[in-house]
Length: 634
Image 1 (cartoon, rainbow, N blue to C red):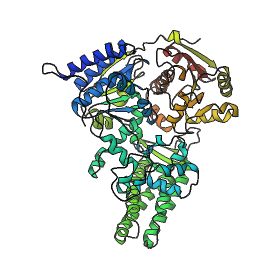
Image 2 (cartoon, rainbow, N blue to C red):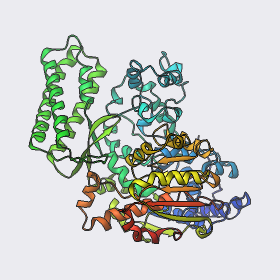
Image 3 (cartoon, rainbow, N blue to C red):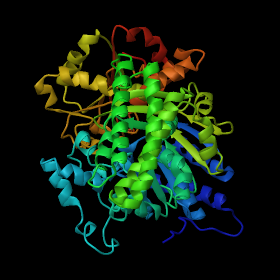
Image 4 (cartoon, rainbow, N blue to C red):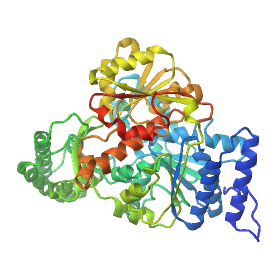
C-alpha cells in the first residue's frame, strides 16, 4: 500500500517547497530535541539533494565523516519516493554494507523510532547471495558435514510440496547462514552457469521469492552497486526474453560510497570462463540414448577446452597477484578459434537431440544458453580488441576473466541518460575538491557538486602514528600493538593475499582473539566484533562503509598503503594514462587511505588511534599522503 507523504501538500506551494520546510523542521528542531546534533553540513547536504531532485541532475555530494550523510539523503529520498509513487534505490559499495545500513540502531532505524515514520525498506542482494536449489542438491550428494544439514533444515517445507508458494516466506539469503564459510557457501549459491530462465525450480527458488518481495517496496530498495550494474547490463535482454528486470523502475538513485561505481560497472560487464565448468556441464548430458555424433562433438569440445586451459597456464606471466596476466601465444589463439568451431558444431547436434527427448529439457536448455555465452566470450578473447583479460581463481576454480576497459559509453546510455536524479554520496569523491577525476572516469559531463568538511575536531580525538618497518617486521609489530591494550582493533590490508600472509605468520595465541574476512559471513563477523566477542577484525574489503561508533572501534591499523595491484585491470588503466602514477596509482591510494582512516571517528563521542605501517619501499611515499591526513602524525 502506498504510504502518505510525511508532510502536508497545499495548492499554493510546490512539493519541493513543502519538502524543504519539512526537512528544516526535522533537522533544526525535531531531531535535536531527540538528542541528535544539529549539523550545518548535514542540513546543507539535504538541501543540495533537494535541488538535484528538482533539476533531475547528477550530484557529487562529498561530505566528511560525521556529517550524517545517510539521514541527509534518506529524508528527501523517502519523500520523493512517495511523491512519485516509485521507490528510491540506495546502491551500497558492496554486499557487506547492505546489512549495515538496515541494522538495529542504524539511521533508518533511528528515523523510524524518532520521527514515527513507517519506512518500507527492502534488500535486493546480488544473485550469488542466494541459495541455488539445483547446486544445493548436487552438493548435498557429496558433502556430509554439519553445515549442509543446517541448510537442508532451513528450506521451508512448502518448497518441495505441490501447490501454491504464496504462503512460503523468502528464504535462502547468505546472511541467513552466518556460520558457513565463504568457501562452503560458494558450492551452493547461485553462479553464472545456472540458467534461471529454464530452471524447473525457478518459481520455488528463494532468489525468486526475494525478488518478488523487494520489487513491491514503496519507499526504499537497498542493493549493492554491483547488482545495480548487473540490472542495467541485463535489463534489455531480460525484457526481450519475457523476464522482469532484476530491479523495478525507481524514482532516484543514491550511490553510497559512489567513488566505487566504476569498478562495479566493469564487474557487471565481465565475462567469466571456468576451467572445469564446461567439462562438468557436458558430462551431465552424456546419458544413455544420446546419438554417437553428439557424444563425439561433446568429447571433442571437452578435449579442446582442456587444451585451451593447459595453454592458458603456460601463457600466464608469473605473479603473486590474484589476477594473472596472460601473454597470448599463437597456439592459445589457434585453440580458441577451434573452440568456436566446436561449439557451433555441438549446438547443431543439440537441435537433433531436442527432437529425441533423451536429454532432460532443462539440462539441454541450460547447456545451449551457456555454450552461446561461452562462444561469445572466446570470440572476445581471441579478437584482442579493447578488452582486459586475466586468469584468477573464482569459487575454487581457475577462471578466465574478460572485462571491457571502456565503460563510459555504457554508463551514459544505460544510467546517466535516463533523466532521473542520481546522488553520489561519499567522504572522498574529489582530489582537493576537484571532481573532474571521478566525472571523467565515469563519462559524466553535466553535474552539480559540493564538498563540506567533517564537523569533528580531529585534533582532540584522533592520533596518527607512522611506523617505519622492514617488510618482515610488520606482523610482529602488529602483535605487539595488540598486546599493549585490549582495544577493539580493525586491521586493513590492501589485498586478500596480504591478509593471508599476515595470518600465516601469527602465533596461535594471537589468532584466538582475531577474526578474518572469509572465515564466516562478513556481517556476522562484524556483529561479533561490535559486541566485543572478537577483539581484532582483519579485512581487505572494509576500507569504506563500516560504521562502529565509540568503544566498538578505537584503533585502526593500516597494514600496507592501499596502492592498486599490479594486475591486468590496473595495467590497462596505466597503459591508457599519460602519467600512470599521478593519474592512477596516487589518487586510488589517497582516496582509499582516507576511507580507511574514516572508519575510526564516526560520532562526536568517538576517539582512538590510527597506526600506518610503512615498509622500506612505502616510506618514499610519505609526502604523498601526510597532507591529506586529518591530523599530523605524532
